Image (cartoon, one colour):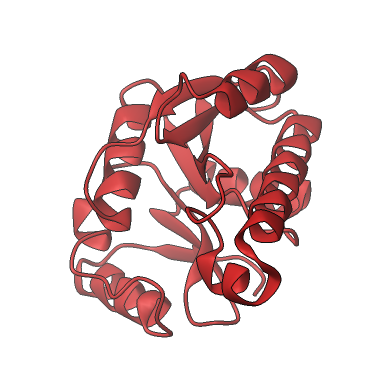
Length: 187
C-alpha cells in the first residue's frame, strides 16, 4: 500500500431496481439499470483495489448491513460506513469529515465512473500530498467525478445544484474565494 495515511471513499447505493440509474432505467428498464449499476460498482472497486494505494471505505446507502455491501466488503477487503445526511452534499461532506478523523487526506468518488483509472486515483493522492488543498476530477457534464482534500471544507457540499452542469464551476468559485489551491485531473 503506497499511501497508508490516505483514505479512498467510494459513495455507493445498493443496486436495487428503481433506486439507482433511474433516468437510464426509464429507457432500459429498472432491472437492467440496476444490473448495470452493480457491474459498474464492481468495476470501480476492482480498479480501486488493484491500485493498492490506501485503505478503501464504501459509503453505503441504505446500510452497511445490506447483503450487497457485505459481499463487496468481503470480496474487496474494504471498510463500510453508513452514508449520513438527507442530500448528496450532506452525505459527501459527512463521509469526508469522518474519514479525515483517521486519515491525512481523502479522495471521494462515485461508484459508477467506468473511465476512472488507478492513475487518476494515484494522481489525486500525490497532488494532495504535495500540498494542493483540493483535487477535482472534472466531468464532461459540468460536474466532477472525484474530489479530494486534506481538510474538511463543508462549504463545498452545501447549496450545490447537484446533477446540473454548474456543479464544477460553483465548487471552483468557492475554492477561489477562500484562497484554496486546486489541482485538476484530466477531464
